[in-house]
Amino acid sequence: MRQVLLIVDVQSTFSPPEWLVDGLRWLSANIPTIASVELHDEQATPFQRQLGWHPAAEDESLVEADQVFVKHGYGQTVETLEYIKQLGVERVLVCGMQTETCVLAAGFALFDAGLTPTLVTDMTVGSSLDRSGKMGIDLWKHHFRQVTTSAEVLAALAM
Image 1 (cartoon, rainbow, N blue to C red):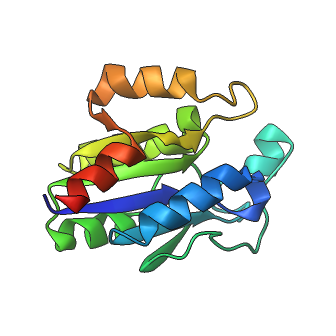
Image 2 (cartoon, helix red, strand yellow; image 1 turned 90 degrees about the vertical axis):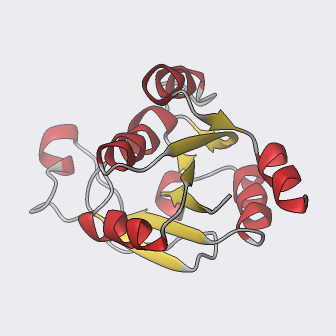
Image 3 (cartoon, rainbow, N blue to C red; image 1 turned 180 degrees about the vertical axis):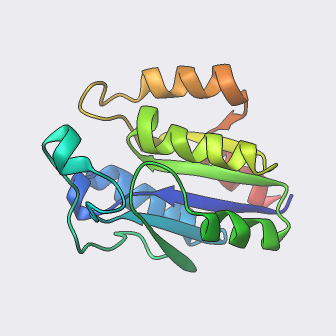
């Protein structure tokens, strides 16, 4: 199956746990990988004005990727979606930070673009509201149905 890994916002700003960074490094070494990094631009997304906080203005992905896209807000950029479409993949494996916000927003953007988003449930962390990510995983299952684990992905690649 032709697939790509999309790592959402695994960057210093969001203090990802080391187990997530290590797991994603292992996974990304075995599959084509794209990463998004969320940077602050108050003109693009009013984080400070509306929420009283903002991501860093400069940051980078903590996991090496074949392509990294900068975004200013929750959703993925048009450029990211176009790049993924050009790859001609059958599914997009999604993982990363804030399962019920940025990761879920990536799922909606991918779905709306006609792609097949699949959540890698053991490679995602929820926001401060639910660090377990369970709420986001449940929302993902409700909206997109497609979920997998890193072990399942790696097992399928070994076949």
